[in-house]
Length: 339
Image 1 (tube, rainbow, N blue to C red):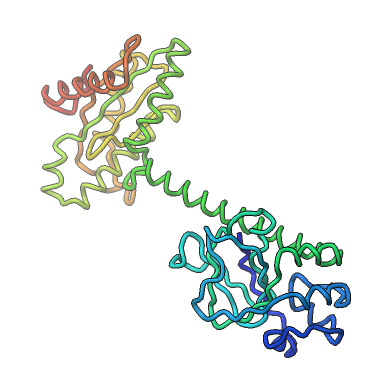
Image 2 (tube, rainbow, N blue to C red; image 1 turned 60 degrees about the horizontal axis):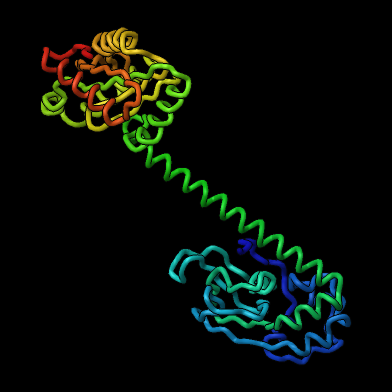
């Protein structure tokens, strides 16, 4: 991968001459090579003969230098101008800009693989071109050159690891959004499909009961029609806040969809679950306050259906049983708990 570090150290005017001629002789002062990251502290006389065998390339702005799928056998050092690095395609945002003194292409030689990124001229750019056979000759000829190459490689690896870490962070953020309900902050139905079976399996292993409570906000459509969708969202947020407080941290509470919630109670049988559900129902009915202002009471009620997992039962069957119980509660007049 690529370091995003920019090389802004003052460059002697004679460096520009390297872009115009390949005549490399003893007049090269150590200070000239210091501007190039691979040649810092390298004695000119150690690599002079090898430098004379190098080539020069003029790269136009927008011209492609390296790309995945194209074998590379050279290291390119920027003598003037600059290069842009893109990952994925040339149209992606610039990952790094390699300026005067920087090099590209060394990773593909070391790894004996095609380049991992697209390198394109950010402007008209002049390059020193070092073939891989000459590169290894310089490694043999100069300890300082070899050390510089290791430093460059370590920077590339560190940059690569940072890109991986950043990408992993973005992936984790995406996964959180994919499994978290944006309105309430509870797990969503997708998270339920992962967490419920896991908890059920643990209870079965421990030979402990597990119960499911399905929760529905009564007459929520009428509430929305009367007070508007913004008020409806505030009501759902208030209900979810109370549910989160009322249930244990180990209970798995999710927004099942719309105005429905589901909560799995590990190590709880149906009779105890009924008692818990009625307590929660009363808490919502009597204390559904908008979290933004504790003085604003939201007139909502909930109905709840309770079911216990049977031996060798399935999650689908458990959900159907709790749904059926919820239907009975609503059919009996709402603001009730049924099993």
